[in-house]
Image 1: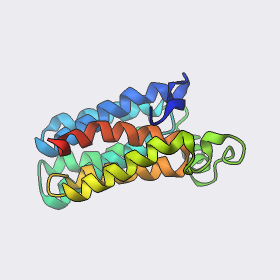
Image 2: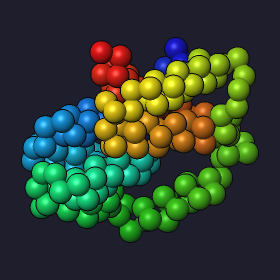
Image 3: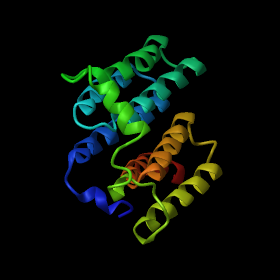
Image 4: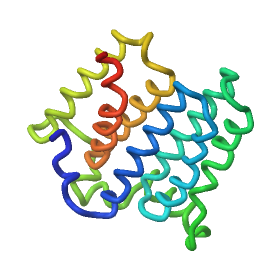
Length: 187
């Protein structure tokens, strides 16, 4: 309901279950350090061949590895694999040589931002009201329950909120992150 435009079938739709699975895997890893988190790498490879939002996913994977390394939690090898191999997974594609230019174009100066509504920044308006209510509620809850929120969860919520504010098409990522992370704060 907070991002009704996500109900349209398009390439991004294929990335939604990949995001949900990846985020669940990374959040679970914060509770129980396990080499199972390395399943994030094949998820990135598949996602990278489906949709460009894999860059956001790679940022989450690198963040999880960095937090592990800084806090000296879990295996250093696993953390380094997430940090180093994670971004390289974005290039495991028949289009590997063109992808850096594509990601740069789409992230730095997307050509559609002035033409397509979903590429414009998210502003308060009737169709985004629920998103902004959810964002305010989540921010208040995160501050109130900050002792229960892991550093990674806080980063994931902040990153996906930024993605949602950057363009209306990104609201869906924040909504999914809220669905994965916020229920534990409500316990």
